[in-house]
Figure 1 (cartoon, helix red, strand yellow):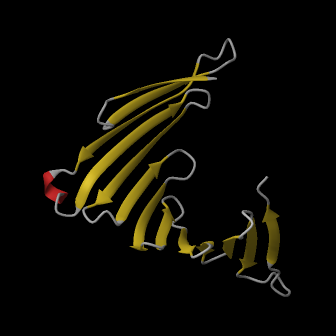
Figure 2 (cartoon, rainbow, N blue to C red; figure 1 turned 120 degrees about the horizontal axis):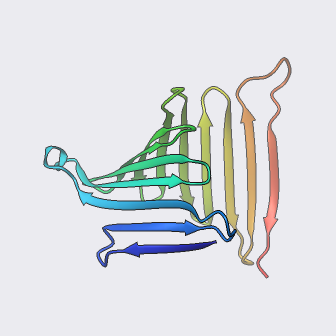
Length: 175
């Protein structure tokens, strides 16, 4: 497939079209983005607003994303509108090492919370679904250049027996 992208020099807008490598398909997806300063009624709280419409021609599926950035630069909102599962996410930078981002599914009201922490030699990511599970991913950079990665999933409800945690440890090597 081939993509064509147009953009302005100030990076306030862009448009893209992706073409299929198959002869009969033609255009697969089209999308655009436009960023503007916030409207005057909310300019004390919001620094910028970005609108990104897209259309998947193959699946006949429209989507749009609306993002805002706070004046402080520490909080963003992301509204993803699509046919499957539209969501609203708030991303807040607690400090230079920690971020929290709750996400709400608009059709179901289901809430998940993501916590990300940068550690001295790695990172810790946690996804919490209060009704189902907690997922953890710990990455530890080793002195030899590789990484140790621990993935753990802990279901929050036992199905008639003991809670079965799934813990996986792996080593990533650098060659």
